[in-house]
Length: 165
Image (cartoon, rainbow, N blue to C red; front, side):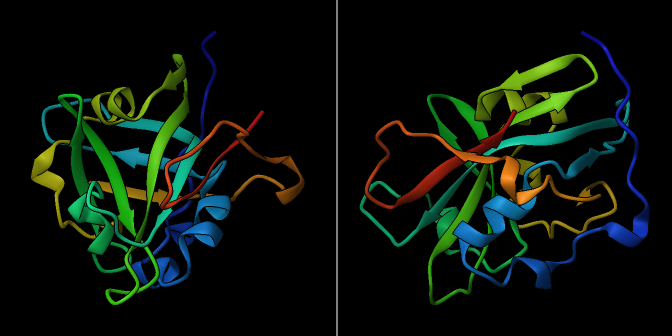
């Protein structure tokens, strides 16, 4: 199913200060917002954030991106795929949010590896600020009543997976 997703107004662009809160709070406030990727040599990609995962605390298997400052993009790798993490909280309180799924004009992009691939985000964006002119988030979130927490078992340091219908 193809449909149009509007580019959000620049006034709604989230800055790094927005992410200086717990990952659980940020995760829910990201759902429904629009992510824009405008990489040189590629078409502009616009999609709504459909699903995210909130992480806090460190475990031996935790990605290093968990320790990034609020609002810094971290690119971690799992199963040979790039994943987009965004630092939250503060550097002394390791936490981040991972983009899991997008609602794009081409349909649902499901999975963190497919999400980064669709947006064209690679390890070149590791440590870039989320308010970069080439990769940013804006627009409005979904109504909090539309946020659903996935009920599957999650790793110990995961606050949860959240999505909207």
